[in-house]
Amino acid sequence: MQDFDPTDYAPETVAVRAGYQRTPENEHSEAIFPTSSFVFASAAEAAARFGGDVAGNIYSRFTNPTVRTFEQRLAAMEGGAACVATASGMAAVLATVMGLLRSGDHVVCSRSVFGTTTVLFNNYMTRFGVEVSYVPLSDLTAWEAATRPNTRLYFCETPSNPTGELVDIAALAQSARAHEILLAVDNCFCTPALQRPLALGADLVIHSATKFLDGQGRCLGGAVVGDAERVGKEVYGFLRSAGPTLSPFNAWVFLKGLETLHLRMREHSANALALARWLQAHPAVTTVHYPGLETHPQHALASQQQSGYGGVLSFEVAGGRAAAWSVIDATRMLSITANLGDTKSTITHPATTTHGRVAPELREAQGITEGLLRIAVGLEAVLDLEGDLARGLDRLR
Image 1 (tube, rainbow, N blue to C red):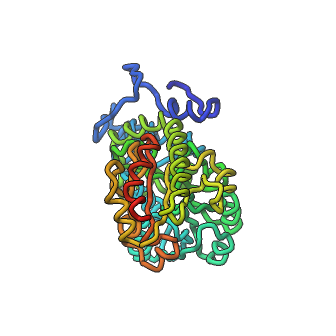
Image 2 (cartoon, helix red, strand yellow; image 1 turned 60 degrees about the horizontal axis):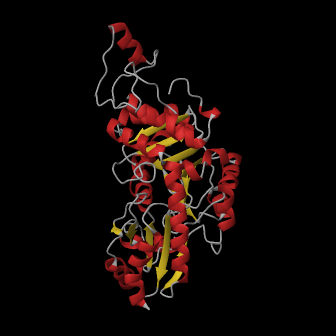
Image 3 (cartoon, rainbow, N blue to C red; image 1 turned 90 degrees about the vertical axis):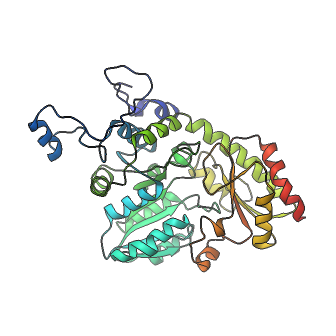
């Protein structure tokens, strides 16, 4: 949309309209630019583009109009000045740490993060001389205690995967600022439709666009949102040189996903809350982890910093792995897959899938037991989800 100022409009409108300048063809839907390179009017223009003296398209590894539209729209939704889109959510994490850290730096990370994030820090970033310490997500005193003179980054997910633990983002941001440390928040579970970490004081927001931003399990992608200096120059500089690039087609798919994001997140949240209450009442379920439940220890915090509770929950059954697997194998409708954020509900056993490569003692500290199951609640009828889970849960009684 021509001359669209996102500050003049509601978030739902920003998700539909922001970031796009129509081509001379005056198309209504955003155009896809599936091209590897761009043509210059002269040698002088080419030199000016490559030298950074004149803005414009150069090469689709780091400049593409469709990708740029997705970046500008997501930045507007999160309230950031810059966004760098990447080939996957993990590529977004990698671009962040490689763009902003150096040998000798120290990271404090919440122990309840996606398993592959832990593997990236432990197995790869340590090779480059980056040290990592892990702390309980919600324990602000632990973050303070783990902070060192060389601490450069606080990294967390809130709500966490898969137990739905939260941290007070504003309080953690205040602590980070006091030590001149950057705070990065993985906002995958909530998206900007339900939570805006930058407005609460965070410096960086990480996304796996593969999840709710897409919303239908179609494409891989990721993004980093923040300010013009750190994200717009440092993270972007890593992407330009290393090339973990989002494809134009995937960017277009994500743009279409953003248009319905607020509608979907409201429905995901409503379905998840209804299913969580049903699970809580089932005699075979020992514990339900979902911030929307009044019994959740951080329900008040979730209500304060989120406008909804999201579509992901987890629950535990007695009997360990065997019981958990029997519930999964008894389902007929839920998709047995580790992905989340889809219109189709998915079920997985975190201890042997998403967090299977995490050390057992760290899994235990995160509350990821052998009897824990995670459900990413989709958009099916809740009664059908309950009926499908009842097949296995009723047998456990």
